[in-house]
Image (cartoon, rainbow, N blue to C red; front, side):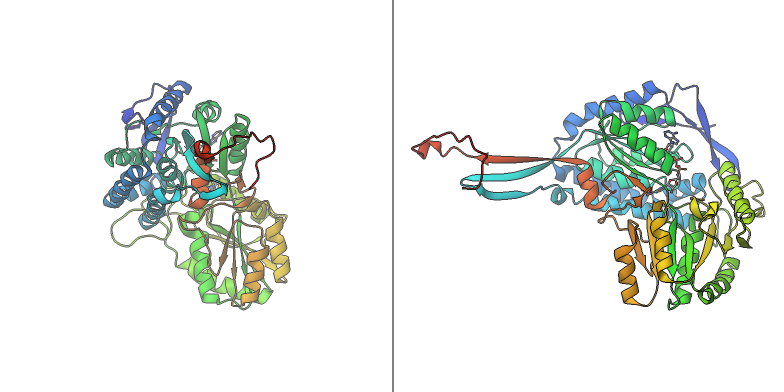
Length: 503
Ligand code: NAD
């Protein structure tokens, strides 16, 4: 069986580890590849390689670094079909969704191509008589990315294009569930002209992660994954003196106001709840329907939409399905346990996705779209992230109750409102406690030139990913204040022992 290797110093390197994991095709349930779970020594060798490459790479002019990224972008476009098929095969998402993921990643590469402008720093002339100040935005050194299974290409591309563009070197530790794409991206970077050792991939699990979090040569850690691991990564990396951004899980709510355009809202909610089988950190998993009449109208239309959702294999000839399988047998079981608990706690199960069968793919990890009504805040299906195609409707009497529920939830990644009323929408965007807000937009994922990140337990660390926060995260500021020797022309050379102030 093919073994997915590490990519260190520009070479594919097989692991000596005794520990391996199977990579499955979630649509068929077959194991298709094996991935090494790298040893501590192998992880250290990736760090050492990146550490050695930093000296030269950090001195490349930003323009030269940008030119390599321009080539990388062109190669991503040329290879799009092959890459999207690979993502779909290991993750299970449908082909067009895999193309969408690649596109969102590519947009960060495009943003990073502007690095000569983004990394200019600031300049102030005459901060004192004959004194000028300018800032340098310098790279940090070895940066690390630890990524989740659900966007195997896009999430790493939130990180490394900006890290590399700003002059850092990088070690990527992808999810062991769909690791192949990371090596393909490494090969394309090499083909684009990136010097060997600047970008490395180490396959593995907690053993590799723990080395990355504690090695003194690593300067910064970017993490995306579930909240318990995000918190662990943040506290451990911080305790070792590293800069860290750790993005965690979510429970994204939308408020459906009685005046909303119901057809538009139902279309938006259906795609956002069930797209990628609900395995998106920006998936919409709760609708707060304001008033019983609004809830009843929503359910009537939602049922029709759900009836039309096609579930099946991600890549096939002819018409595409809307939804693929979930990532693993264990994850399928976990989602079904949540559905059981919703029923046990008294929610009304309107559409049941348990036991969903796709003809010809009986061993695939399929869960059908699932809809609950009369969900209440003390239920487990309301409080926890399910990360599957399960949508909960909570009936609320008014807008303020809806807002309060969102603001009291432990997560605060995204939140949306559907309304025709500008004042309500404005009030919502000002007062809702979430990092990304949609007004009649169900998945308000910011573009690459803005920054992505939630609030509350959806993020640990002060800086979001990509956009201007991304540039700030991967650079440190140095401010230079300079005076050139006018002393030859001056008659007096008195020392001043006071705090320098503008003269
Ligand atoms: P996960 O937390 O299980 O794994 C993420 C990464 O951490 C993987 O590389 C994994 O190998 C590593 N890891 C797992 N257990 C570890 C441990 N005990 N110690 C050290 N490292 C460990 O997450 P997942 O299941 O791959 O991804 C789904 C989660 O990611 C969901 O909770 C989802 O909301 C979240 N997510 C969040 C965002 C965001 O932007 N906030 C984006 C995508 C996904």
